[in-house]
Amino acid sequence: MAEPTQPVIAIRTGGSEDSVRPGRFAPYRAVLASRARAQRSYRASFRLDLVSSALVAVVELAEVLVLYRSVSALGGLSLAQVLLVFGLADVGFSLASLGFGHVDDLPEHLRRGTIDVFYLRPQPVLAQLVTSDINLRRLARAAVGLAALVVGLIVAGVPATWRSAALVLLAVVCGTTISSALYVAAGGLQFLVIDGAEMTNSFVYGGRYAATQPATVWVAPVRAIFGYLVPVTFCGYLPVLAMLRLPAPGWLPAWLAWCAPLAAVWAWGLALACWRWGSRRYQGAGG
Amino acid sequence: MRARARVWWRLVVAGMRESATYRLAMLGGLVANLTFGFLKYGILTARVHAGGAPVVGYSVAVMSAYVWLSQGMLGSINLFGRTALAQRISSGDVAVDFLRPLSVQTSACLREIGRGLLALAPRGLPSVAIGAGLVGMALPYGVAGYLLGALSLLLAIAVSATTVYLVGVSGFWLVETRGVQVFYMVVSGFLAGLFVPIALMPAWLQVTAYATPFPAMLMMPVDVVSGRVGGLAALGLVMAQVGWLLLTAALGSRLTAAGRRRLEVQGG
Image (cartoon, rainbow over all chains, first blue to last red):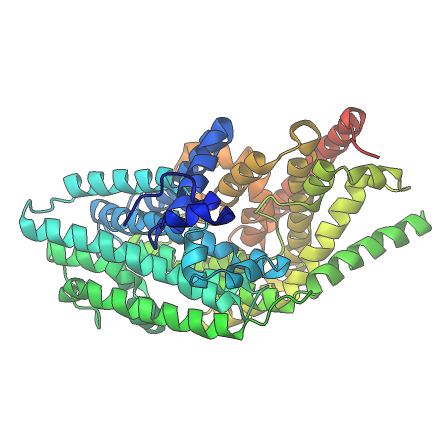
């Protein structure tokens, strides 16, 4: 893949430049790089965004700390163990929202009709939408998650073995994949319920919230939904059970943690089905 | 005075119509409330059981009431910090609002209250009905309890309107209010007691929370309606809400007057 020597935007302006053949991914790279540059160029605003993004994560962490204050265990997990669950789930979710969070802006594109532009370009709509932006401020959020994860790893007495390392890696990679799938699924459904964004929030942000909880406290239907249908227990809870060899609740055995790649494939299957369903139904904003 | 009251009422109705237009959004909100409700119900009742004896006045029934009431009120109070006013200030449209024979603050707040009141029907009642029907929850004591609870709910919606107005009005000085709005969004939910009941927080955090108007929007009405706080103490909470309403309304009116003098609209 040849690197373009000049901005990609200039490539199609004249016949002579056509000799510079950009790679298939060059347009995506160019857009992403420009978005990243744009966010950092307004320094004060970017710093404020970083601070507020970190603050969101700190408040979410504070919720856990308040809940576990003055109790030794909740839902079969101690504070140290739940920090580990929180850290794993939050790192995965933050990385997913770094890359996919702006898929949430789809209703705005639909209302303004700007989505039509995406349909006109010779690239898949989803790929364009995902690479149309990157939320660098979510790095601050990931940092808070990472801090909780590191503290959790130290204080929860995780055995320092390759097995633990493999589980952590698996949880972060598959957690990011599963969380990204939630954003894409929500995006697909937005085509049908433009004003009902909150409906999809219930499994995107509800999923994030559920991923940081011990599944033991859930009633059976909730366990079925967030255990299997929207498999967020694979992002943090199950890997921690497997890592620390803790007793598992019914219907969610700890060895399932090793099946996280399957859960990720399932989540993306659902997400792409939702996306196809929604995007094929789109008929344009008219005009 | 009667003519003025009629205008006020029309503004409340306009707010109601505005939110009644987006039916699917209401349904979406309800689904989200129920999802979060069940997730919160699980962990918070576990917290009650783990504490052995009722944790600081919380039995399972009262905790359940907290979960469903707070989720049900989410559509009626503004914890996002987004206002139409902020946009009208940055675009300069607010100049037209100042020409009208009605205070900018009053009309903005009344419409916000109208929106909040209407949301009680499609989001508040079903959340509470489904939650209470499926898992049970504590209810107010007697007729007086219901009346005081209703008053407390109304005051909560009003305090939310006058407080979020302050975020919008900051636009006279800042023009771009996104930073303030995001900060409001992050802090308000936590200090209002949406994430965890304020009574579970450490003392210093409780003091911090009650030093802000946010508990008056959520925690106080929930405490009054669920009967966790009863009798004279409940009356005290309602009085505190009235106090926050007066304070935030007075501050809003001062800032509107000061902001009006600063306002500079460009273009013709």
